[in-house]
Image (cartoon, rainbow, N blue to C red; front, side, top):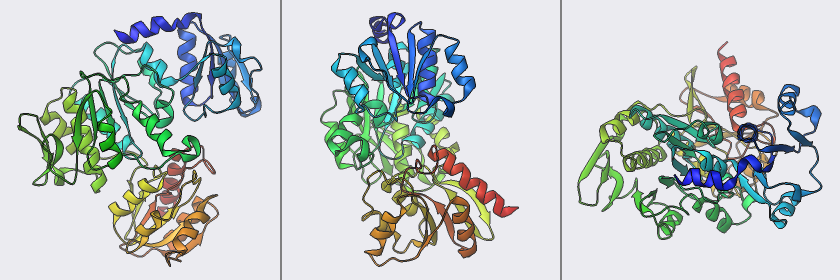
Length: 462
């Protein structure tokens, strides 16, 4: 297999490898490289006293060298740098390694090289966690040995090392992971949508789109590329793919691809045959965006050879993912939803539209350089009040006030937000955490933020 050829080509056992970043991805990459008998060093911006001593001892006992709170002076000593997704390739010491001819790559690329299993890869500005999780559920229901990995929270390389030829790696791929790929080639790829995000990292839309496009860059006519006919950028990307393009749409009927016909999710094959999956009203997950997610998951799975009954049954049973419009219960006639994964304006717009009306919105955090002028237009007729949280929440307020919206309360932390929302809410209202911002100003990740929100809601009931 090509993966094995690349793994041999890499000669990992002889390489002096620097892992950059000691998060989940970095730890998994370091463990894999040790197992593959590479000489491993680890760099992290945190100082030694900020890192778990047990973790440090475990690695040091295996001969790992650390650069903590510092960077190596001589980058030419390394054969390869493996960057964690959150690490910018523009950092000076990484650029110095590139200039010296050192290979700079990421965990997803290395995982592909060492894996024996086949890859399905899904990306997009929004919806990729739901679509990846749902696709994984479909594959499992079909009886396939399936690893659901990637940006979803499970390191790709940890699963790829133990994968067998008949196994499937259903992978959520972020732009950060894709920008460091070189040979990565999934059997089925999907881009769900593309809108401005992570501009503080990619700087331009062109660079962001280019990173996303790496998902299909190495595919051939024997592979499949599933993408969104309703998204103008995705339509343009269809022309660049050498793989067989399978479009999906929630707004129009297609001559070929997946769409909604008479209230049912279907796929029309090239010969005109209609494959019927299920009725849209049979789905547990709410919102028009989830119609698109389900169509994408169905198309990906069908391209991978799974039958329509299995696909329909899995979608019918699927209840959604944690932190994405996750229902947290009803208290005194008020519904509470955790949408902490709404880390950009597009994602939060989707959540607001899905809930519909009488919303008390908790929003704010790390704005990532976003402009909120379009986002706040969705408040009209839907959002009653906004609880502002986090470092950049004032940008949301400034944009909204230009439209005449002035129903804001500034909160010091999540407990304060939930408490004040509870005091303000009336029966029939919905308290929605959908920040439209990243969590890094106050939390380690959006999961931690969502868990804090759910804990606050649980305490309301006690």
